[in-house]
Length: 310
Figure (cartoon, helix red, strand yellow):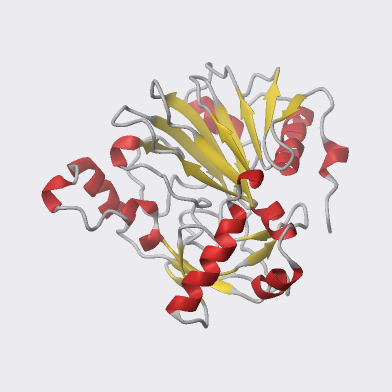
């Protein structure tokens, strides 16, 4: 059943669209665990309608308050399926000293229960650069030609954590890799996860069809390596067309919330060696379902300790 999100937006929220296809800024809200239920519902509706929403001047938020607010949107996951030693509760630090997330992806698609929502809070922002870009995977599917839709509708892909951006620098000279960065990669790959997902999933709240791809994809099922690479590149390029994207310039006190089921994102690595740190919390999601009603299948790894099912 398709949800008309425009009918449920709290009209008291100051929601300002940033583009026709994705992104909105919400003003006049002090985020926290004590927000009225109708305000939380309005934020969620704006999120479903715009895929990613941004809040400025949330300087009062710390790790505890970020988690308290996030819990109003759903059940919190653990920080990460393999990176567990954060010491920050349900928060995963996104820290440039561990590597730069400059690759298009949705969060944690290598498990069967992909997070529904992610919340990212600015902690340390470089003096220049360090923006993040999001892409709308629902519009990407909607605007595909009919012939490409027919192809994508039948495809399945294997996602794995071994293909994450954290593991793409294996060819660097051993002596040239920062010890902290190498240690983080090793922890990221300490357990192997592989899951078979439909390339087109049905969004569980809006009923939209969305493309489920990104950097965690290892291969498309049933195709040769050359065929898999070519079709992946074709569909991925449709997702990241500039018309489908919004780019955010971070400032201290910012919080971004995105629908991880209908977006990909990319951290732009244009800030040299300046420090950059943001704190992420993710909300438990469900197992994706194809347009035929078939659920994703975990091939390797048990994610039940990382996240319950929504």
